[in-house]
Length: 415
Ligand code: SF4
Image 1 (cartoon, helix red, strand yellow):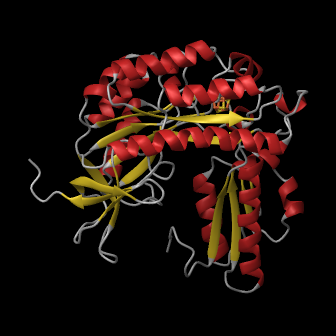
Image 2 (cartoon, rainbow, N blue to C red; image 1 turned 45 degrees about the vertical axis):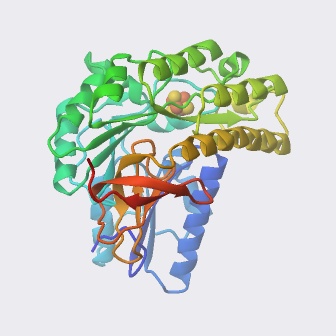
Protein backbone atom coordinates (compact mmCIF):
# COMPACT_ATOMS: atom_id res chain seq x y z
CA UNK A 1 0.00 0.00 0.00
CA UNK A 2 1.21 3.53 -0.78
CA UNK A 3 0.67 6.23 1.82
CA UNK A 4 1.54 9.91 2.26
CA UNK A 5 2.25 9.28 5.97
CA UNK A 6 5.03 7.43 7.75
CA UNK A 7 2.81 5.30 9.94
CA UNK A 8 3.14 1.59 9.19
CA UNK A 9 5.52 2.17 6.25
CA UNK A 10 8.06 -0.54 5.36
CA UNK A 11 9.85 1.58 2.74
CA UNK A 12 10.18 5.35 3.16
CA UNK A 13 10.78 7.45 0.03
CA UNK A 14 12.24 10.91 0.72
CA UNK A 15 11.78 13.45 -2.07
CA UNK A 16 14.63 15.92 -1.56
CA UNK A 17 15.42 19.53 -2.42
CA UNK A 18 18.85 21.09 -2.79
CA UNK A 19 18.05 24.58 -4.04
CA UNK A 20 19.91 26.38 -1.25
CA UNK A 21 21.87 25.46 1.89
CA UNK A 22 18.90 25.38 4.30
CA UNK A 23 16.88 23.19 1.91
CA UNK A 24 19.83 20.82 1.58
CA UNK A 25 20.27 20.70 5.36
CA UNK A 26 16.58 19.90 5.74
CA UNK A 27 16.84 17.07 3.20
CA UNK A 28 19.93 15.64 4.92
CA UNK A 29 18.27 15.82 8.33
CA UNK A 30 15.25 13.93 6.95
CA UNK A 31 17.52 11.23 5.50
CA UNK A 32 19.42 10.84 8.79
CA UNK A 33 16.17 10.65 10.72
CA UNK A 34 14.83 7.84 8.54
CA UNK A 35 18.17 5.99 8.58
CA UNK A 36 18.00 6.02 12.38
CA UNK A 37 14.51 4.53 12.20
CA UNK A 38 15.86 1.88 9.85
CA UNK A 39 18.76 1.10 12.23
CA UNK A 40 16.30 0.66 15.10
CA UNK A 41 14.18 -1.74 13.02
CA UNK A 42 11.15 0.58 12.75
CA UNK A 43 11.28 0.56 8.95
CA UNK A 44 12.94 -1.73 6.44
CA UNK A 45 14.19 0.51 3.64
CA UNK A 46 15.07 4.13 2.91
CA UNK A 47 14.89 5.50 -0.64
CA UNK A 48 16.22 8.97 -1.48
CA UNK A 49 14.97 10.68 -4.65
CA UNK A 50 14.88 14.14 -6.21
CA UNK A 51 17.06 17.22 -6.57
CA UNK A 52 19.70 16.38 -3.95
CA UNK A 53 20.48 13.16 -5.82
CA UNK A 54 20.42 14.94 -9.19
CA UNK A 55 22.88 17.53 -7.91
CA UNK A 56 25.37 15.37 -6.00
CA UNK A 57 24.83 12.11 -7.85
CA UNK A 58 26.73 9.04 -6.71
CA UNK A 59 28.83 10.97 -4.16
CA UNK A 60 25.79 10.67 -1.89
CA UNK A 61 26.37 6.92 -1.63
CA UNK A 62 29.52 7.66 0.38
CA UNK A 63 27.72 10.13 2.66
CA UNK A 64 24.75 7.83 3.29
CA UNK A 65 25.96 4.24 2.76
CA UNK A 66 22.92 2.61 4.38
CA UNK A 67 20.39 4.17 2.00
CA UNK A 68 18.88 1.34 -0.05
CA UNK A 69 18.22 3.23 -3.27
CA UNK A 70 19.07 6.65 -4.71
CA UNK A 71 17.04 7.97 -7.65
CA UNK A 72 17.81 11.04 -9.74
CA UNK A 73 14.77 13.05 -10.84
CA UNK A 74 12.68 11.91 -13.80
CA UNK A 75 12.38 8.17 -13.81
CA UNK A 76 9.25 7.68 -11.69
CA UNK A 77 8.32 4.40 -13.37
CA UNK A 78 11.82 2.99 -12.78
CA UNK A 79 11.59 4.15 -9.17
CA UNK A 80 8.23 2.45 -8.64
CA UNK A 81 9.39 -0.85 -10.12
CA UNK A 82 12.70 -0.81 -8.17
CA UNK A 83 10.77 -0.29 -4.92
CA UNK A 84 8.35 -3.09 -5.84
CA UNK A 85 11.31 -5.39 -6.54
CA UNK A 86 12.98 -4.52 -3.24
CA UNK A 87 9.78 -5.03 -1.28
CA UNK A 88 9.17 -8.35 -3.08
CA UNK A 89 12.66 -9.61 -2.17
CA UNK A 90 13.87 -9.48 -5.80
CA UNK A 91 17.15 -7.94 -6.86
CA UNK A 92 16.92 -4.20 -7.48
CA UNK A 93 19.39 -1.46 -8.46
CA UNK A 94 20.91 0.70 -5.69
CA UNK A 95 21.12 3.77 -7.96
CA UNK A 96 18.80 5.02 -10.71
CA UNK A 97 20.11 7.53 -13.22
CA UNK A 98 17.75 10.04 -14.84
CA UNK A 99 19.02 9.15 -18.32
CA UNK A 100 18.84 12.73 -19.62
CA UNK A 101 16.40 15.58 -19.11
CA UNK A 102 12.86 14.72 -18.30
CA UNK A 103 10.53 15.17 -21.28
CA UNK A 104 7.63 17.57 -20.59
CA UNK A 105 5.15 14.74 -20.85
CA UNK A 106 1.79 14.28 -19.18
CA UNK A 107 2.08 13.03 -15.62
CA UNK A 108 0.46 9.66 -15.10
CA UNK A 109 -2.29 9.02 -12.56
CA UNK A 110 -1.13 10.58 -9.31
CA UNK A 111 -1.48 9.61 -5.70
CA UNK A 112 -2.20 12.94 -4.04
CA UNK A 113 -0.09 13.90 -1.04
CA UNK A 114 -2.21 17.05 -0.64
CA UNK A 115 -5.72 17.20 0.86
CA UNK A 116 -8.49 16.56 -1.66
CA UNK A 117 -9.21 20.27 -1.83
CA UNK A 118 -6.19 21.29 -3.91
CA UNK A 119 -3.41 19.81 -6.01
CA UNK A 120 -0.24 21.18 -7.50
CA UNK A 121 -0.14 21.02 -11.28
CA UNK A 122 3.34 21.28 -12.77
CA UNK A 123 3.00 23.07 -16.10
CA UNK A 124 6.59 23.04 -17.31
CA UNK A 125 10.07 21.86 -16.44
CA UNK A 126 13.32 23.80 -16.19
CA UNK A 127 14.27 27.44 -16.56
CA UNK A 128 16.01 29.59 -19.20
CA UNK A 129 17.04 32.33 -16.75
CA UNK A 130 20.51 32.51 -15.31
CA UNK A 131 20.04 34.01 -11.86
CA UNK A 132 23.54 34.10 -10.43
CA UNK A 133 22.58 32.52 -7.09
CA UNK A 134 20.49 29.66 -8.44
CA UNK A 135 21.39 26.05 -9.12
CA UNK A 136 18.02 25.05 -10.53
CA UNK A 137 18.77 25.42 -14.28
CA UNK A 138 21.86 23.25 -13.84
CA UNK A 139 19.77 20.61 -12.06
CA UNK A 140 16.55 20.78 -14.06
CA UNK A 141 17.77 22.00 -17.45
CA UNK A 142 16.22 24.53 -19.87
CA UNK A 143 12.54 25.42 -19.92
CA UNK A 144 10.16 22.90 -21.56
CA UNK A 145 6.38 23.39 -21.51
CA UNK A 146 3.94 20.56 -21.03
CA UNK A 147 1.28 20.47 -23.75
CA UNK A 148 -2.02 22.26 -23.13
CA UNK A 149 -4.05 19.17 -24.01
CA UNK A 150 -2.07 17.09 -21.50
CA UNK A 151 -2.51 19.64 -18.75
CA UNK A 152 -6.26 19.84 -19.30
CA UNK A 153 -6.39 16.06 -19.19
CA UNK A 154 -4.38 16.03 -15.93
CA UNK A 155 -6.75 18.66 -14.53
CA UNK A 156 -9.76 16.49 -15.45
CA UNK A 157 -8.18 13.54 -13.70
CA UNK A 158 -7.50 15.60 -10.58
CA UNK A 159 -11.05 16.95 -10.57
CA UNK A 160 -12.43 13.44 -10.80
CA UNK A 161 -10.35 12.62 -7.68
CA UNK A 162 -12.19 15.46 -5.89
CA UNK A 163 -9.70 18.31 -6.34
CA UNK A 164 -11.24 21.81 -6.40
CA UNK A 165 -8.22 24.12 -6.65
CA UNK A 166 -5.33 23.75 -9.10
CA UNK A 167 -2.10 25.42 -7.99
CA UNK A 168 0.01 25.95 -11.11
CA UNK A 169 3.73 25.51 -10.45
CA UNK A 170 6.89 25.60 -12.54
CA UNK A 171 10.35 27.07 -12.22
CA UNK A 172 9.10 29.99 -14.35
CA UNK A 173 5.35 29.82 -14.96
CA UNK A 174 5.16 32.92 -17.20
CA UNK A 175 7.43 31.17 -19.71
CA UNK A 176 4.78 28.50 -20.24
CA UNK A 177 3.82 28.01 -23.88
CA UNK A 178 6.46 30.23 -25.49
CA UNK A 179 8.16 27.16 -26.95
CA UNK A 180 4.81 26.28 -28.59
CA UNK A 181 3.67 29.76 -29.74
CA UNK A 182 1.28 29.97 -26.82
CA UNK A 183 1.14 32.12 -23.69
CA UNK A 184 0.22 31.35 -20.09
CA UNK A 185 -3.21 33.11 -20.21
CA UNK A 186 -4.42 30.55 -22.77
CA UNK A 187 -3.59 27.73 -20.39
CA UNK A 188 -5.08 29.47 -17.35
CA UNK A 189 -8.34 30.09 -19.20
CA UNK A 190 -8.52 26.49 -20.47
CA UNK A 191 -7.97 25.12 -16.96
CA UNK A 192 -10.44 27.56 -15.39
CA UNK A 193 -13.07 26.43 -17.93
CA UNK A 194 -12.48 22.75 -17.20
CA UNK A 195 -15.60 21.27 -15.66
CA UNK A 196 -15.30 20.83 -11.91
CA UNK A 197 -12.37 23.25 -11.45
CA UNK A 198 -13.34 25.86 -8.87
CA UNK A 199 -10.11 27.81 -8.58
CA UNK A 200 -6.88 28.16 -10.56
CA UNK A 201 -3.93 29.80 -8.83
CA UNK A 202 -0.75 30.97 -10.55
CA UNK A 203 2.55 30.62 -8.71
CA UNK A 204 6.15 31.48 -9.73
CA UNK A 205 5.49 34.19 -12.33
CA UNK A 206 8.68 35.93 -13.49
CA UNK A 207 8.27 39.73 -13.45
CA UNK A 208 9.90 40.47 -16.81
CA UNK A 209 7.95 40.00 -20.10
CA UNK A 210 4.76 39.55 -18.14
CA UNK A 211 1.88 38.19 -20.30
CA UNK A 212 -0.59 41.02 -19.64
CA UNK A 213 -3.63 39.17 -21.02
CA UNK A 214 -3.45 37.30 -17.72
CA UNK A 215 -4.61 40.47 -15.91
CA UNK A 216 -8.20 40.25 -17.18
CA UNK A 217 -8.42 36.58 -16.14
CA UNK A 218 -7.11 37.36 -12.65
CA UNK A 219 -9.60 40.21 -12.39
CA UNK A 220 -12.72 38.83 -14.04
CA UNK A 221 -12.75 35.06 -14.26
CA UNK A 222 -14.73 33.58 -11.36
CA UNK A 223 -12.55 30.45 -11.31
CA UNK A 224 -9.17 32.23 -11.32
CA UNK A 225 -7.85 33.42 -7.96
CA UNK A 226 -7.29 37.19 -7.81
CA UNK A 227 -3.81 36.35 -6.63
CA UNK A 228 -0.38 36.16 -8.16
CA UNK A 229 2.87 34.78 -6.83
CA UNK A 230 5.58 36.82 -8.52
CA UNK A 231 9.02 36.36 -6.93
CA UNK A 232 10.93 39.62 -7.39
CA UNK A 233 13.96 38.83 -5.15
CA UNK A 234 14.89 42.48 -4.61
CA UNK A 235 13.86 46.07 -5.33
CA UNK A 236 17.31 47.63 -5.88
CA UNK A 237 18.63 47.68 -9.46
CA UNK A 238 22.30 47.04 -8.49
CA UNK A 239 21.20 43.92 -6.64
CA UNK A 240 19.03 42.69 -9.51
CA UNK A 241 21.95 43.23 -11.89
CA UNK A 242 24.30 41.34 -9.58
CA UNK A 243 21.73 38.57 -9.33
CA UNK A 244 21.58 38.56 -13.17
CA UNK A 245 17.83 39.04 -13.09
CA UNK A 246 16.13 40.44 -16.18
CA UNK A 247 14.79 43.99 -15.83
CA UNK A 248 15.50 46.53 -13.13
CA UNK A 249 14.07 47.85 -9.89
CA UNK A 250 11.91 50.23 -11.95
CA UNK A 251 10.53 47.38 -14.06
CA UNK A 252 9.67 45.45 -10.89
CA UNK A 253 7.90 48.45 -9.36
CA UNK A 254 6.06 49.30 -12.58
CA UNK A 255 4.91 45.69 -12.92
CA UNK A 256 3.57 45.61 -9.36
CA UNK A 257 1.88 49.00 -9.79
CA UNK A 258 0.24 47.97 -13.06
CA UNK A 259 -0.99 44.69 -11.57
CA UNK A 260 -2.53 46.55 -8.65
CA UNK A 261 -4.10 49.14 -10.93
CA UNK A 262 -5.52 46.70 -13.50
CA UNK A 263 -6.65 44.10 -10.95
CA UNK A 264 -8.33 45.81 -8.01
CA UNK A 265 -8.09 43.71 -4.87
CA UNK A 266 -5.31 41.48 -6.16
CA UNK A 267 -3.16 39.75 -3.55
CA UNK A 268 0.46 39.71 -4.66
CA UNK A 269 2.80 37.22 -3.09
CA UNK A 270 6.52 37.58 -3.55
CA UNK A 271 9.88 36.25 -2.41
CA UNK A 272 12.88 38.34 -1.39
CA UNK A 273 16.55 37.40 -1.20
CA UNK A 274 18.39 39.39 1.45
CA UNK A 275 22.10 39.67 2.19
CA UNK A 276 23.25 39.18 -1.41
CA UNK A 277 26.96 40.09 -1.88
CA UNK A 278 27.41 43.85 -2.17
CA UNK A 279 23.97 44.68 -0.71
CA UNK A 280 23.95 48.07 1.03
CA UNK A 281 21.69 49.50 3.72
CA UNK A 282 20.17 51.74 1.02
CA UNK A 283 19.32 48.65 -1.07
CA UNK A 284 17.61 47.10 1.95
CA UNK A 285 15.68 50.29 2.66
CA UNK A 286 14.48 50.42 -0.96
CA UNK A 287 13.15 46.88 -0.62
CA UNK A 288 11.42 47.63 2.68
CA UNK A 289 9.84 50.70 1.06
CA UNK A 290 8.57 48.55 -1.78
CA UNK A 291 6.91 46.16 0.69
CA UNK A 292 5.21 49.12 2.39
CA UNK A 293 4.24 51.06 -0.73
CA UNK A 294 2.78 48.08 -2.53
CA UNK A 295 1.22 46.76 0.68
CA UNK A 296 2.75 43.33 0.21
CA UNK A 297 1.26 41.14 2.91
CA UNK A 298 2.31 37.76 1.52
CA UNK A 299 6.10 37.78 1.41
CA UNK A 300 8.59 34.98 1.86
CA UNK A 301 12.25 35.87 2.42
CA UNK A 302 15.48 33.94 2.51
CA UNK A 303 19.10 34.87 3.03
CA UNK A 304 21.85 34.43 0.48
CA UNK A 305 23.50 31.03 0.44
CA UNK A 306 26.70 30.70 -1.65
CA UNK A 307 25.95 27.62 -3.71
CA UNK A 308 28.77 25.63 -5.23
CA UNK A 309 28.88 26.05 -9.01
CA UNK A 310 26.97 29.35 -9.11
CA UNK A 311 28.41 32.67 -10.24
CA UNK A 312 27.33 34.40 -7.03
CA UNK A 313 29.34 32.03 -4.84
CA UNK A 314 32.50 33.66 -6.26
CA UNK A 315 31.40 37.28 -5.73
CA UNK A 316 33.22 39.53 -3.30
CA UNK A 317 31.67 41.72 -0.58
CA UNK A 318 29.82 38.92 1.15
CA UNK A 319 27.42 40.22 3.78
CA UNK A 320 28.13 38.72 7.22
CA UNK A 321 25.43 36.19 8.07
CA UNK A 322 24.28 38.05 11.21
CA UNK A 323 23.75 41.20 9.09
CA UNK A 324 21.90 39.19 6.44
CA UNK A 325 19.65 37.76 9.15
CA UNK A 326 18.94 41.25 10.50
CA UNK A 327 17.93 42.41 7.02
CA UNK A 328 15.80 39.32 6.55
CA UNK A 329 14.07 40.11 9.85
CA UNK A 330 13.62 43.76 8.83
CA UNK A 331 11.75 42.96 5.60
CA UNK A 332 9.59 40.43 7.41
CA UNK A 333 8.80 43.02 10.09
CA UNK A 334 7.67 45.43 7.38
CA UNK A 335 5.57 42.65 5.87
CA UNK A 336 4.02 41.79 9.24
CA UNK A 337 2.88 45.37 9.75
CA UNK A 338 1.12 45.32 6.36
CA UNK A 339 -0.23 41.85 7.03
CA UNK A 340 -1.82 42.89 10.29
CA UNK A 341 -3.51 45.85 8.61
CA UNK A 342 -4.73 43.86 5.63
CA UNK A 343 -6.05 40.97 7.72
CA UNK A 344 -7.55 43.27 10.34
CA UNK A 345 -9.32 45.22 7.60
CA UNK A 346 -11.13 42.07 6.53
CA UNK A 347 -12.64 41.28 9.92
CA UNK A 348 -16.40 41.56 9.48
CA UNK A 349 -16.18 40.75 5.75
CA UNK A 350 -17.84 37.76 4.12
CA UNK A 351 -15.95 35.65 1.61
CA UNK A 352 -15.75 32.15 0.13
CA UNK A 353 -13.22 29.60 1.35
CA UNK A 354 -12.21 26.12 0.26
CA UNK A 355 -11.95 23.67 3.15
CA UNK A 356 -8.58 21.88 3.34
CA UNK A 357 -9.17 19.99 6.60
CA UNK A 358 -12.69 19.09 7.65
CA UNK A 359 -14.16 19.79 11.07
CA UNK A 360 -15.07 16.15 11.77
CA UNK A 361 -12.62 15.70 14.64
CA UNK A 362 -12.18 19.14 16.17
CA UNK A 363 -15.35 21.06 15.38
CA UNK A 364 -13.23 23.62 13.50
CA UNK A 365 -12.19 23.39 9.85
CA UNK A 366 -9.02 24.70 8.20
CA UNK A 367 -9.78 26.58 5.00
CA UNK A 368 -8.34 29.17 2.60
CA UNK A 369 -9.71 32.21 0.86
CA UNK A 370 -8.54 33.06 -2.66
CA UNK A 371 -5.87 35.39 -1.22
CA UNK A 372 -3.96 32.51 0.38
CA UNK A 373 -2.00 29.75 -1.35
CA UNK A 374 -1.64 26.43 0.44
CA UNK A 375 1.39 25.82 2.65
CA UNK A 376 3.05 29.23 2.16
CA UNK A 377 0.31 31.72 3.13
CA UNK A 378 -2.30 31.99 5.85
CA UNK A 379 -5.36 29.92 6.69
CA UNK A 380 -8.89 30.59 7.88
CA UNK A 381 -10.29 28.67 10.85
CA UNK A 382 -13.98 28.00 10.37
CA UNK A 383 -15.76 27.18 13.61
CA UNK A 384 -18.52 24.92 12.37
CA UNK A 385 -19.41 21.23 12.42
CA UNK A 386 -20.00 19.11 9.38
CA UNK A 387 -17.40 20.57 7.03
CA UNK A 388 -15.29 18.25 4.86
CA UNK A 389 -12.16 18.79 2.74
CA UNK A 390 -13.14 20.19 -0.64
CA UNK A 391 -16.30 21.98 0.58
CA UNK A 392 -16.67 25.56 -0.62
CA UNK A 393 -18.55 27.72 1.88
CA UNK A 394 -19.14 31.35 2.66
CA UNK A 395 -17.76 32.59 5.96
CA UNK A 396 -17.56 35.81 7.93
CA UNK A 397 -14.25 36.75 9.54
CA UNK A 398 -14.88 37.32 13.25
CA UNK A 399 -11.37 38.00 14.57
CA UNK A 400 -7.67 37.28 14.05
CA UNK A 401 -5.66 34.63 15.87
CA UNK A 402 -2.06 35.26 17.04
CA UNK A 403 -0.63 34.45 13.60
CA UNK A 404 -3.03 36.85 11.89
CA UNK A 405 -5.16 34.01 10.51
CA UNK A 406 -8.87 34.71 10.33
CA UNK A 407 -11.16 32.94 12.75
CA UNK A 408 -14.50 32.73 10.97
CA UNK A 409 -18.12 31.75 11.42
CA UNK A 410 -20.07 29.94 8.78
CA UNK A 411 -22.62 32.04 6.93
CA UNK A 412 -25.62 29.72 6.92
CA UNK A 413 -27.72 31.69 4.45
CA UNK A 414 -25.35 33.31 1.92
CA UNK A 415 -27.25 35.92 -0.04
S1 SF4 B 1 14.03 32.28 -12.50
FE1 SF4 B 1 13.96 31.05 -10.61
S2 SF4 B 1 14.54 28.96 -11.22
FE2 SF4 B 1 15.13 30.32 -12.89
S3 SF4 B 1 17.30 30.77 -12.51
FE3 SF4 B 1 16.08 32.43 -11.57
S4 SF4 B 1 15.71 31.81 -9.42
FE4 SF4 B 1 16.43 29.99 -10.58
